[in-house]
Length: 114
Length: 116
Image (tube, rainbow over all chains, first blue to last red; front, side, top):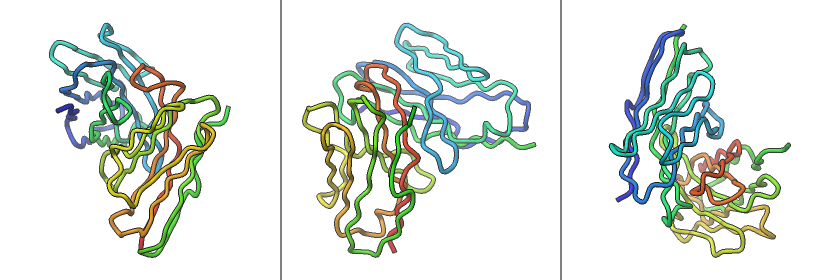
């Protein structure tokens, strides 16, 4: 069964600190992996999209990594800011699947405290 | 340019009533998705439209739920005989092509539905 698991469920860090969010997936055949940021009361916004051949991709202070062999991805946030408080969702695309070919994780809720 | 818009932003309805939720995708986007998000939960897939192909309805939770997309643009999600468990935020997204093909997916702000 195609699944995307994220950890931790929630995380609290102090402003200025770094953090890493994890995503494990059992999706086949794999097409690409995305990370979304969802602010409270808003729709998700795409941060990165990585294909099979990409190991890392950055978007400002956000850096995503992908290990297609172990089927793991991480999202590293550097020098966190209060505005980073949000839910971070890992999404994996599968060729030929249903659901528009997108499998969503349940998200990690990040709280950045001053 | 304009993003994905949804209306209404909030809807309160009585149990048993029908509701219609509207989504205006980004112009030219052939793919359109509907999702449901209950409080504190992840996104639940409902239905997917791609061009003129038959929609993927595999996520619709019951036959009270239906959706259509007229002229390949605007989409309406209809919930008949609403139940309290239908209370959630309903999100619409669109993309230039099938999201499985690495096309960027753009979400609207959502419609918060409350069934009393």
